[in-house]
Length: 204
Image (tube, rainbow, N blue to C red):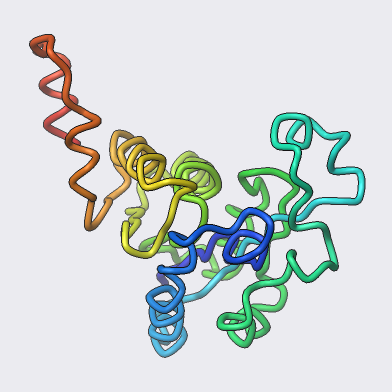
């Protein structure tokens, strides 16, 4: 079985308190990818949902990012309307997470696929934060399972952060499709590469 993990496609991250134009732009493509996945009997769709309590401002995240968002049972916490129909089909396999990554996600993946896991794909928001965090958790849990991310199905807080997040994932062997050109500029530096750096860079 294949798994598509749709990360934090919630109102507050698209057009709410932490929304961006970059997030709005990817919505149609993400909706189409989810539709395709639901039409494939060999693919399971899982959603993650950033979930905070009323005491958000007292938490470590709240002190570093003082913008209450995705507070449980508020409008901003909900999956965006364009995907809500699909998220309701995934009842029981929505991972509500209090932080960037979901520690329960690997168990949900195992349960949903009955331990018959072929491939994991991630999409959603934000590339350098929650997509990155959940990809890392899944890579640690399933080191022999191919994991992929399509850059066109994710968005970062900024285009630069998006590229940094993709480059980070690529460096630990996530298969990143449609890498933006900006990452090449970010990866350039003036010092010659050592043999070890060349070998690592070759894998990226």
